Length: 136
Image (cartoon, rainbow, N blue to C red; front, side):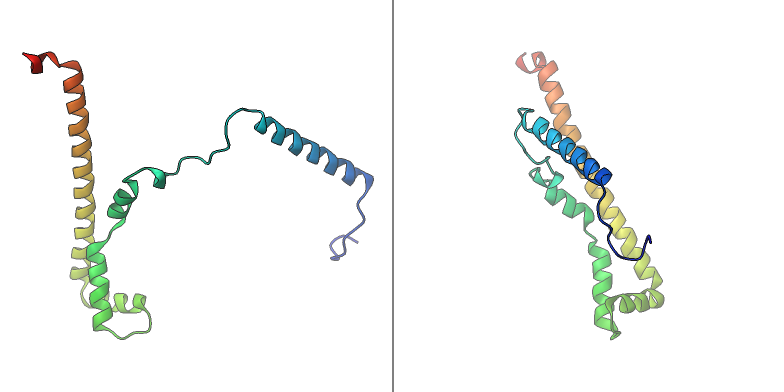
């Protein structure tokens, strides 16, 4: 009976399939070893210097955290979510201002990063292709 929770004895067909899968896996492992490239993990975004700082700045929610801080000071509900929900209900304008301030802070950070990278790239292009203007 199928599905009664009892394992059946493997058949010869099951054993042949298992041997073919095992042979294929061994062949794949050997071909990867012979590829000549060292086994290195792929580069993660967190491995790039300075990228962790940029990631944390872009994820920061300073003003919304300030809103949650006030909710925790003001209300004595059991969970932080309940306290924040009560403060949102009591002061929706304050909540919207905090959310917009977070959005503007992220936009400002993005603008600063973009302008800095643009200035560096433009300086490189200018000095590389228009070096004659500096020597004159």
